[in-house]
Image (tube, rainbow, N blue to C red; front, side, top):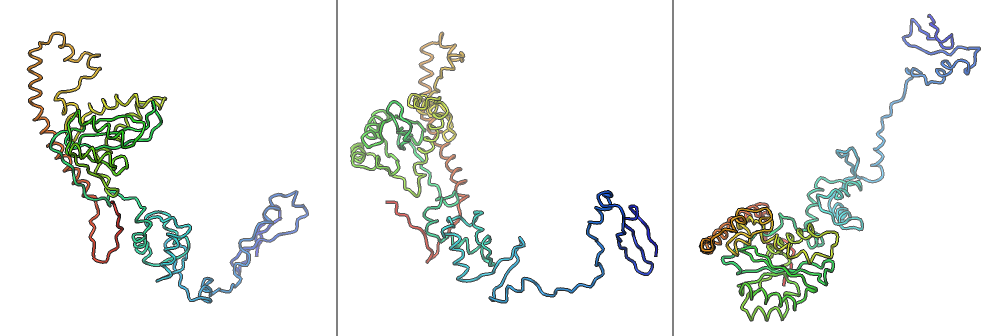
Length: 396
């Protein structure tokens, strides 16, 4: 045996020739620990080799085996390494209902992150996802109040109009912030030309609707049909009397299929967007900007018809102030034009108007067919069998 000393004999490394191990031995040192910091620190460290060869008893019992001593329950270690209790049958259904429609359920969808409440509560069964989807699809509250996605919509049935000003769609916008006493906007749009008429109104009752319609008929003629929603301002005796007097058919959109008046909804969004971007800090001045918004809307290119509504109605382009300000070609020629030549050109435009409207009809038909094909391709193919439960909506 030999001893190699370190740290001024405070510690020694002892090596034995007949035993292959090392032991740190603390020797007596007359110096205090405060006077020898290194030795004092090492003396307080835990010996990593202490009792390394002492025999230890092997614990052959699994701690979690005690879970089965009281109740014959089955537990499963899931992919997230959390042990959950396995349930089945009626108990699983009750747990699923409590996590979906209980006080803390919230009626979330099967794909919502909070649908993991069953896992968070510590339960598991193999068909949990399938059962959750089935439960939510049969939940009455979810089916009545749930949002209809594009995949749940009905197939599109396009409204194709042959003649200009034959079918009008009408709807109200508002209420808005009062502007010169006006809080509502009554919007009417022609289904073929996309021509828009709008009027700022103080109320949205039947009286103002009838007044605007009479003005509309006197300017563009009595249409074949008017499409509106089921608001009380459109479904009343006064409105019906006017429709009967002028021989106009009144068509209604249903709550389940509001796309019937989709053209008006698109126009409403367009006008609202223009007003939002043109009205300044004084939000109450929106009624003063309505005429400018209509001008902008009527002179904007519409993809379905392949031209502007103004050109389809009048057979010529609308001249804008910027053309005069920056001297467009026609403005420069205006000082020297020949009235006879200009008249002949205008006659040619009027003769081409019918051809222009026929072309707009064809463009609109092609556009709507493509839109319908794209829309219907995203709808889920539903097959109903006898005995299936469906949610019936009374749209009358």
